[in-house]
Each structure stands twice: as structure tokens, then as C-alpha cells.
Length: 411
Image (cartoon, rainbow, N blue to C red; front, side, top):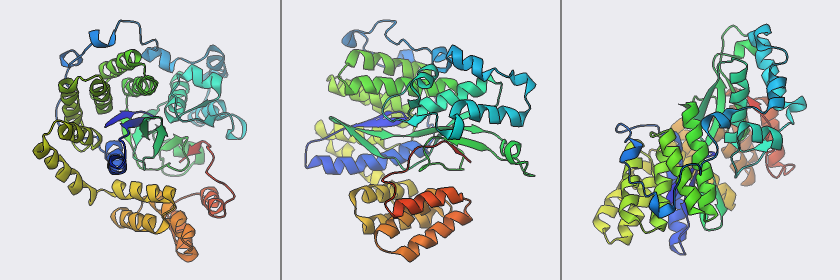
């Protein structure tokens, strides 16, 4: 059974063996499609027309304490730091450099990446750590205070599972893009976008899905709701899922997550309605489709279930993100040859996806194919990967780093 949380991320209810293995792999496939596809099959349903069940979850106004304004509000100390010197006295180049200095600090060491909990801009600043949504919100809030043009975006990445208790979380990824700002930093003849990212493994120059302040607020609420769901607090989970849908009715993940809460509360008809709503909003998204397929099987509606199963199988072969996810999963499991097969398939379908070449280089190296690993590193260099980035990969090959440490990335 699946639902989405944000880093943005998804949460998948685990099944007992042997079903667990089959469903785990299916949900991994779904995560890739959910991240990359933004198609909207029909206009969003107005929130008041949805199957709300306030009484069942003891809902009342005031349970959601963080407003959209509060999410982006800067700590007073930080606000004073941002506005000193006054932004109107700075040119475009100076503004961007000042933002980098404020957010990242000396030697880019101010913040630590910490997955699993989303925070407001002020909370992130005080804690000195956060997940990618938290750090994205902080960067955007600083840029907004300085009057800079900044675009939050949801980007396609290989999606990894994070198991917590009875659930598997499937994280999506967000970052901040500064349109046509590269010339500001380098004085190149052609201005390019600057992407500020907090996951060096997943940074990509490809544009993502633009997110409004309401869109990122909905993802924040969705994350908080899912944290409450994982802790068993259905009242707060319901309140935050409802607020997420009201904040951005076009955000499909919250419908699927609320459907999971409904299923756990035996509200099966309402859960099915929400899953079909999520599928209508994201026509190619697999997470709600898989959840609906499981519901249909439980209800003895096998003929309908088989139809969805064939749809999912047909998507896999033509979806490069399915193969990327399969390759990353195989790397995590230590099956390097399987990882190579999947990532080579992804390479044939993409060509210039730098993350494919990076993961493939690692798979080749672990499989003892040093020459082919070096060829992938050369391809990464041709695609514009910095020497520092390639050096980190080489260190990872040699076991000098068990995992890449977080650092802010500008591209």
C-alpha cells in the first residue's frame, strides 16, 4: 500500500513475507514514475467535494500550527543578517554571493543534511540541519527577503527507500533554481541557471517541475502528516493531509497518503475515491495505482486488478527511471552485475544523464571492471561534472568514504 511524503517522499505500508518482496519492488518502480511525471489528466477537484471524514478523526480547526507565512518566515537574527548590507545597495553578483555566504557560511559547512523531518525556515536556521525540503525553504526565503528571483522545483532523481517501522518511505527531491544567474558568478558570455542543491549525489542540470509557495507548503504539510501517521497519531495525520490538499489541490501525493490513512481506518470506499483522484491528477504515477491494485485484490476484484498490473508492466520497459532505480537498488544489495545490466539499459535510453554514468562507474568498479569505470568517469567529465565531483567518486571507489557527505552544490 503506498502514499507519498516529501522530502518530498512516499510512504509504503509493508506487507508480510513473501508478498513483501514483490510489493517492495513494485513500489520502488512506482517511486520513479511519481517523481518524474507531472501530467494532469483533469482539473483538480475542489477540496470541499472530497470525502472528508472530520468526525472519524476528531478534526478541529487549529490542529495545524504552521501557516504558509510561518513556513517561510525568517528568524529575526537571520533577517537582520540578510539585510546587512541592504539588498538595494548590492548588484546582482553581490546579492548572489551574499546569499551563499549567509546560507552556507564559511567553507560551506553551516548546515548538515538530515533526512526524516521537515522544518520551517526559522527552525532549520536554529537547528543548523534539515532535509532537502527544509533547506530549500530556507534558501528560497533568504532569496525572497533580498528581492532575488528564485524558483523552487521538484526534480527527477533515483528514489531510495528508508524503512521506519512498518512503513517504507520513498523520498522525492526538491531544490532551488536561480534563472540565468550563472553569468553573474562567472561573467560568461551566456547566462545560465544556478541550481542550489543539498544532495550532491543527485544534482542535475535538467530543469524540474516549478513549485509555488503553496506547492512547497503542501509538501511540507504532507511530510508532517506522514510523520504523524508513522507515529500512530491519526488525528494529526488527518489534519495535516487535509491542509495539504487544501493548500494545493493539484498535488496528487496527499490524496494517496490520505487514502492509506482511510484504509487503515476501514474507510475503503473513501480510500478508493482518493486513489482514483490521485491517478487522475498524475496519469502516469504508479504509487496510487499499486495501492488501488492491492485494494482490489483484497476485495476479490481480480479482473480489475489484472488490468492495472498489465499497465504497470507495460510502463517499465520504456521508463529509464525504472532502470535507474533497479540499478541503485541492486547496488545497495551488493548485486553489482545486476546493477550493471539495469544501468546500462538506462544509459541506452538517456545518453546524457550524469547520474546514470556516476552510478554505472561505481557498479563497474565494484564488479572489478576498472577500465569501464574509468570510461564512465571520462564521460562524466565530458558532460561537465567538476573535477571535485569526480574526485569524490574516485574516493568512494577506494573506500575512503563510506558515503558522500552533504555539501551545498551550485550548478
